[in-house]
Image (cartoon, rainbow, N blue to C red; front, side, top):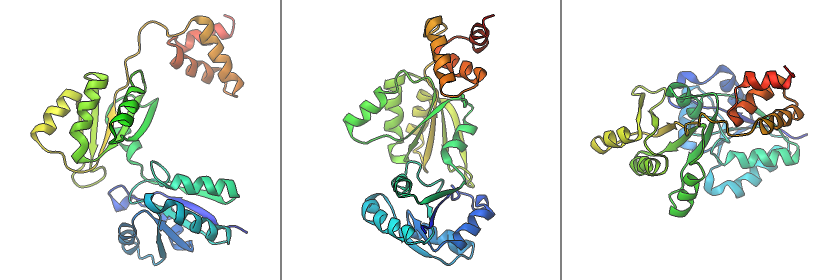
Length: 275
């Protein structure tokens, strides 16, 4: 019988955020796969956990992924952890989760802190619909293609960025999107936590004067919607039906179609009911 892969969320800064269930899970598994064993060892020592650590990260994901899967198929249980936050999000852990799904290995999540959700909640920007874009490529072509694909994005966008790349990214944002609202979050849950709510031009001026420090989560406002509906009434009603066909309730289908079309959800609801 195969073992279980546990996806264990780890603190993004404050060790007090590590849940009792997460501690118990790390104590109970046969071994732990960690992004950086040195970082994870500090966490284990803090909670008095002694367990075998293996290194599983971007540059050994193929080789170590096979070994990890073999041990799971042999009946061992494993906890997958990253340096901070939920594994498998912008992380090679997604590969081993996919392999577990293919081979019938049970995957169990032990949720924990997430930098992207924490930053979104604190941003002061719209949270109902958002898209997580991770790190931008440093390659000129793929970076431009990524940003160009987001020009018409109306959802709030979330990016990760390192301090030494921050100014270039802000300048590229300004060229691509114009001067929009942005929330810059750093050192989340740590002693020097900071959330700067400003515009792209304001952020550029700020960090040209004061060099940025710490890892950043950038929350950028999406493109403003036009007051004019983006679909005809018939197209909007067709969108309602598509969502209904997917199993959504009429109210939920109308809400989603309203976001897609520019029509008011109540208007679509009344039309769909034949009022």
